[in-house]
Amino acid sequence: MAANEYPGAEPFVPRGKPGLAALAEAAGDCRGCDLFKRASQTVFGTGSPHARMMLVGEQPGDAEDKQGKPFVGPAGRVLARALGEARIAEEDSYITNAVKHFRWRDPPGGGKRRIHQRPDAWQVRACWPWLSAEIDRVNPRVIVALGAVAGQALFGSSFRVGAHRGRAQPWRLDGGRRDGGGSGGRDRIVVATIHPSAVLRATDRDGAYRGLVDDLAVACDALGPNARSS
Image (tube, rainbow, N blue to C red; front, side, top):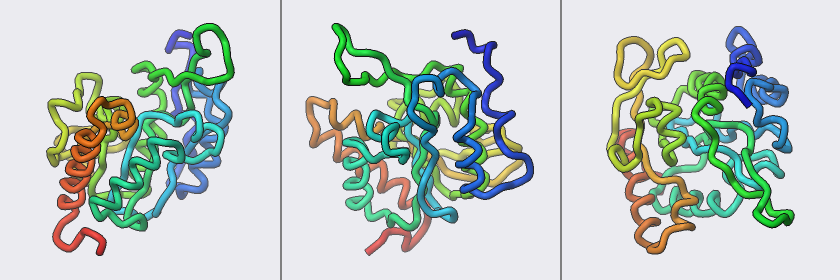
């Protein structure tokens, strides 16, 4: 489908400053891009509404699409374990995705298994108003970009994880616009790392996992002294 056939999420985001519950309810009716047509449901973020850390992934996977919650599948189990090892308190985090609907394709030769398909850049842009609203409401100090799609949602299409991962970088949300260090808005820190699903695909899973934990530790340290849970 052509991007110009869809309005993006902005018309579906409630006006004013509704809470996360109202945003999640409204997102259930989003038709800002074509992904709603094949997804089971909208998958909005979850976690503390006052979290100091927000973790942003790519899009829901098969399990998330079925259950309606982010990171409840195999990648979510990897992330939960890594957060624990990095000593990031669950009550101090909010987890969401850059895109709120599951994009998938049929497997070659038929079958019931739904194959993950990366969202196109225009679909990521179309969904940006939801992520922007979540950042505005939660107001986190640190955002962790889990993978390339999350990083591109925050910094633009030229973003590459390899060039940025494991470093605390300044970032601002200014009137709903992403701004890598520009003026206006609240100063925040973004730390990029791999998506937990990359650990599952890696030849050296132990090494990939340790890198994820190390990057999350950088994000935790960016919160300031005494940020780590006991």
